Image 1: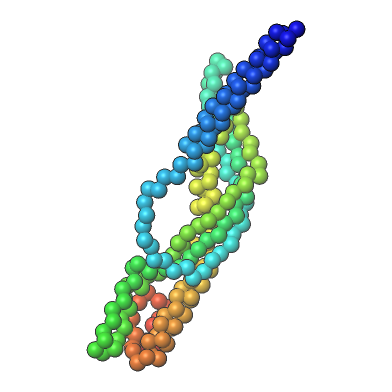
Image 2: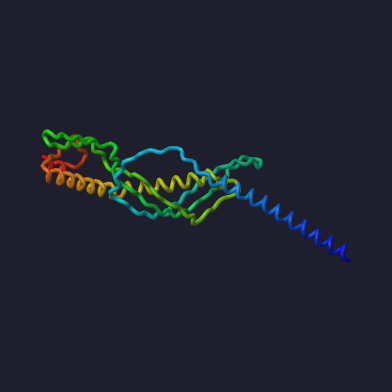
Length: 211
């Protein structure tokens, strides 16, 4: 009887040790897998100087339908249309402003003149968006592929860009840019300097303020 109990106890010890070893191996493998999946690749670091003057919030319902034609011989040639449709809710934020790297500022301490040249037009600097699929319809011969979803995301972002260009965001950004020039002029004149604009891209009524 004691010998049987000893065998059982030995079996339990060996089984428990084996379970512990297997669990540690699995945990190590899982940890290794998680670490490999959390690798971040930094391809390029670039310094930028951009001034955001206007931010716009947009929400659009984007509907895209694609049709694929297939010809079957039954025995006469017959063409069938197979469609797939995606309805997407697009929410995004559009940032409009100026690329200040294009601006050139020269200071002449002798004449106390501040010359600003190469003023850019306002542009869309960034689009931050997210999408949610409201409806997906596809057929056996025309289904959505991973490349299709990538293109849908790209098209949805382009919808926001077009809406932003059609809106008054660029005009508002231009107005904010004019006010920024006014602030620079005021600050310069308060310390005895003069501001000169060369080849300005601002509206004429604003340019006249500097003459």
